[in-house]
Length: 238
Image (cartoon, rainbow, N blue to C red; front, side):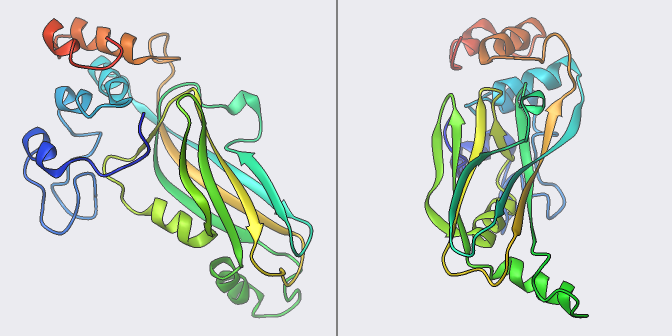
């Protein structure tokens, strides 16, 4: 799977209809946008990467449930480099099937920053956006790729990911986002707790969705009549 990227607009015109001026396909900010929930199953399969798996789940009539996990980190020194930290805190909660990330939210908790000040919540809100904490982001596992190789201001990095990426950000069950954090200047107080929370959508767990591969997904699409054998041969892992 390639890193999250903008699909070719000309390809999408033919596959998913005419884009609405001023926003990308998959952006739900306005009416009529086409998303992974509403795109025709056949065209969804031809999006490439792991999308045949999403198409197969829809072909089976299986629903998607929300799944929330965080990348958490704590600074105990005013100047430090910590991590990398994976998504999720235990092996029991690892991704076990294809997951569609559609939102990431940042929260920074600095309990000793202006403690007792009536304006502490207001100050903490601005601290989250100007904390001086930077981060990089990689997707470990198979396939592995780098999303942000250079350290970026944490709020900037996650704000970009939180924007409406076309069709969401797809992660396979063999992949794991990881982040490393570095202070660009001394923190005014410690500890500082960081929570980067991912909202994902996962297929409901069945014998067919758990550990699904592109090969099994394409077989399902052929068995359910959404793809012909010739069309299957055009997709990866078939």
